[in-house]
Image 1 (cartoon, rainbow, N blue to C red):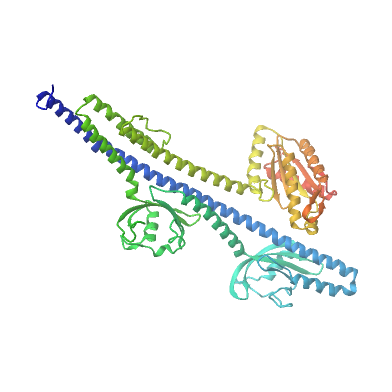
Image 2 (image 1 turned 90 degrees about the horizontal axis):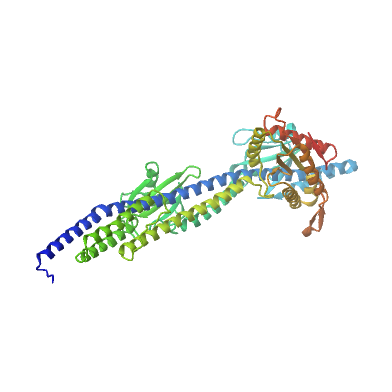
Length: 595
């Protein structure tokens, strides 16, 4: 029987205690620091990764706003032109009536101008008319007969003479100048105007819009996109209570604390340094992008004694600062939890070691090293690996907790990646498609057509192109209204999409013009397809149920095939197809011409 008086037992116990002590020493001074560093690096990497994802998403928002602004300006230009075309039609009708009733010619003219003076649309926009001597004939704010030759904008440039020059020289055109928006606001605002010549009565018709109306639309779109960004950011956490926020030079734009969001961020003090936290963050963004400081906690308001760290990046395209922020103690919380568990394991091993052999102690050490190695692999960016420790002891619990932590981290990153990818795909789709017809827009066509031209040239395969234009589309708008005109455009786009091959590229080129690019197709094949499209359109009237109308329309098509010996770019083919389309117009419309 062994007793504690036995020298052999004492020696065995001393050996075991020494071995366990050495093992505990190894854990505390070798393994734990390594795990601490790994966990800390993982948390910091997570915070930086989240920050980078939000930066990418915010940058995509900037690109979306830029595209939206360009599309909005293009849309408003088309709207100005359409409105002036309507007024032009009114004057043209009045002119014909005056020729048929010469005795009432002057009255017909004056009545028409009076009706035009009452036209309002949009944000109280109006029509103006002046003669070739720059005398005002119609204007809601300028007295009739006022001569505008010497009226200058804030850049000392004449306004009306420039409109007159553009309209007389080109028949129509756009001009920009600075003008007062209303009588109550004396500050001039940049204005875009469209003017058209009406030579029959030696008049210039025009209308305009203020550029700040477009800026208001862009600002509205910006608010919508930021609201979407806010939803994503509010569902993202760093550590336990860490978060992401965005501010600009004026105020806090997005912040999980409603008391801070929308406020002047420049006025928030950094009590620990007696500085302003805004200035400290800006300075950090110009350096290494990291700021350590003292701050309070929601549970301990007003006591700025808690260490906090923020990572910051500046987004030039949006002039915004994106910050991911967390308490240092929370970043170290997982590491401390591991500390406690490992120490408990060490104590348990020390007790059990009095009854077990040194072999079990060495075997017990192996899972710890495996866990540290796994943590290192994950720290290097491989989030697919897991700790393969399936024991029922504390080390197994630690491994399971570690795996759960990595699972959550991987799921968090994947979900954020998915959200960013979905938003990126949506923004990319908006950038290359026409919103009305869902066909590709002109910008995308310019990119893909050049690529297909070079591909066809390398492979020596035919490439054809057809230019399609709706016949007398202005009459459709004038007769049935612009809403019906949009329905006609959508119908043509739908028929093109249904009749083309999957490899063919259909694009709304502008207004009522469309292009169909046909890879590996000769002009004969393109001609046959064009005839089928033309006949389908001719035999497909559109029923407008709400207006109890049936609209029949036709199209004119020009077809051309790439001639690689002479065509230097796709633009040569487009020009030839456009000429062929105008030949179809000249020959009577509703036909297909090939050049």
